[in-house]
Image 1 (cartoon, one colour):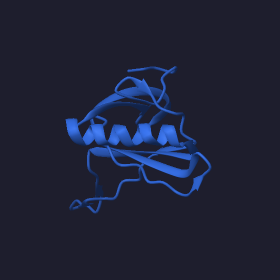
Image 2 (image 1 turned 90 degrees about the vertical axis):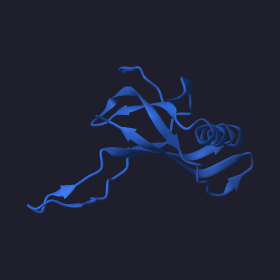
Image 3 (image 1 turned 180 degrees about the vertical axis):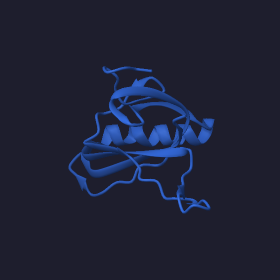
Image 4 (image 1 turned 90 degrees about the horizontal axis):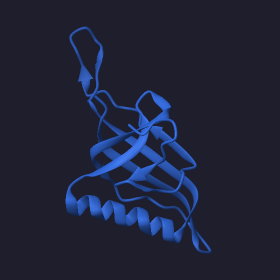
Length: 120
């Protein structure tokens, strides 16, 4: 666990502070016999940047490619249910970032999904 001073990181290397971040809203897998929703134990986390340098975007793309080659990576994210304490999650996948329009040497509306997060 990283604690209150934690930062967003991949494999122990800090990534740029996102403009927005959130745990993805889960979709129920179905319902039990009492009508209660059943959710997967595996979660996703979305990070977003309104404006990101082309160099930082390339770094995020490299992390996603590394994830494809090696299988999984360790990411540091806010702990599930507590956005002020960071935790290291192993066995995660980094999906390829989505991007918006380019503006000089920056990119607008960058989104990155970290998936296969097991919170316990």
